[in-house]
Length: 598
Image (cartoon, rainbow, N blue to C red):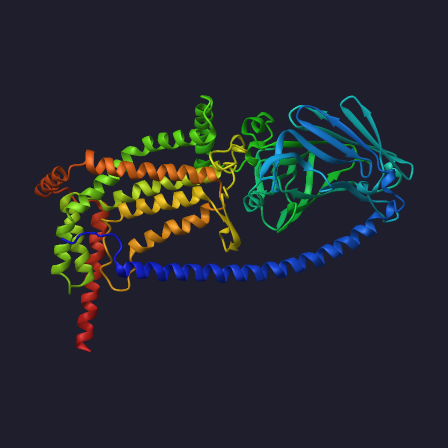
C-alpha cells in the first residue's frame, strides 16, 4: 500500500507549468482586451463629437440663454433633497439625505450621496412644429414657482404654455405632471419623444463591481413582466413600458409613465475612469391628445431596499438582482430573513455572517458526514484497488476499469454519492454571490480591516496593477484561498490517480482551483470572502472531528466485509455503465481481430 505524501515532485512541476500557462492566457487576453478598449474609446470619441454637433444644432431654439438667466427651485423632506433648473424645467439635483457616498480620497463613506448632480441627468420631450423645426423642452427656459411641497415650472413657446408640475411625496417619490395649452397651434404631432440621457455616478468603493451592476431595468405588460439590459443596446419597440429605470448597485432612478412609453430603445457606454461609470441614453414615445401633451409621470429616486421596493406594488422588487428562480427564493426567503434575525441581537455584520455560516454548515452536516464516510470507505478499500491495478497493469484500460467498479460494488461504495455535496454547494454559492454585493443592509458595514463588507478590502496595496487582480490584495480573499488550499490537500488524499497516459491529474487541477479563486474574490465583496473563509475553516474542523472522533476505520472495514458477503443488488446506473463498458470492449475486440486479419 502506497502512502499519500501530498504533492510529489512531478505534481509540483505539473502545477508550476499549468500556472505558467494560466498566467500566459491572462496576459494574452488582457493585452487583447486593452487593444479592443482603445478601438472602442476612439469610436466613442468620434460618436461624442457627432453628438456634440447635433446638440449644438438642436439648442438653437434659445441661443441667448445665459447662466445668469437660469433659476433654481428646491424641495426637501427627510428622504430627498431635490433641486430643479429653469433650463428645461428639469430635476437638476437629487440627494438621498439618509445615505452617504464613498470618498476615494479619504477611503470613507462620508460624502453627500447625489444620484443627480453636475448635469449627469438630462431629459425632455421632443416634437416638431408645423414648419418641421425640432422643439425639445430641455432647451426651453421655464419660470419656477414654489407652493408648499410642489414646484410649477412654466415656459412659453409661440404663445403655447408648457407646464411641469413636480410634487415631492414620501417614500422617495416625486410626482411629475406635464400640461400644455395652445400647443396644437404650433404642432400637428400626435406623440412626443421622451429623451433621457443619464450618466451613472460612482458612489461605491468597488468601481468594477458597481459598474457591472449598473444597467437599464424596466417593467411592461401592466407591471407584470420585468426585464433588464446591461448590454450595449436596448430595444423594446413592441412593448409598452410601464416604467424605465437606471439601476445602480444600491440605488435606482426610475420614471413611471401612467400611459406607458412606446417604441422604446436605448444604448449604454462604459466609462473607464473618472467620476462616472456608464452613460445611458433612453428614448420612448408618449401619446399626445389633439396635439396637446397632458400626461402624468412619477419619478422614484430610491435605495434598493427589498421591503421598500415591495411596498410600491409596481414590480420594483425585481430590480434587486438576487438571482432567478430557486436562487432568488433562497436569498429572499432564507438568507435575508436569517441575517435580519441574527442582526436583531445587536451583533456587528461580520459576526452575523459568522453565525450564518455555522447555521448553513449545521444544515449541510448530514450530507458532509456521508461524503467523509464515503472518503473513509474508499481509503479502506484502496489496497484492493492498488492490487487490481498492479495485476492488470498491462491489461486493457476498459477491463481495468470494470475490475475497479466491481470492487466498489461489492464493498457497497457508491462513487456518485461524493458528487452530491458539490452539487448542493453550487446554488448556495451563487445565491451568496448575489446576496453580499446587493444587500443594502450590509452597505458601509465594516469588520476588522474591511471598511465595507459589500466591497473588497485593500489592506495590502500594490505599487502596480496585476491583470485580473488589480492594484491590491484582499486579506480576506488571501485567507480564504489558503484555507481552501488546505482543505483541498486534506480531501484529495483518496483521489484515484489517472490510469491512462495522457489523462489529466485531477489532484493538480484541484490545487490550481484555489489559486484561480483568489482572482475572483480579490475584487468581490469582502463579506463573501469572509463567509467562505469561515465555511472552509469549519470544513477542516469537521474533517478532523469525523476522522479522529466519529469514524472508526476498523468498523468501516468490518462493514465493507459484511457488504461483500451480502453484496447489494446492482443499481441501474452501475448496470448501464457495465453494459456500456462491455459493449465498448466487444467493439474493441472485433476491431483487433479485423486488424490481425488484414
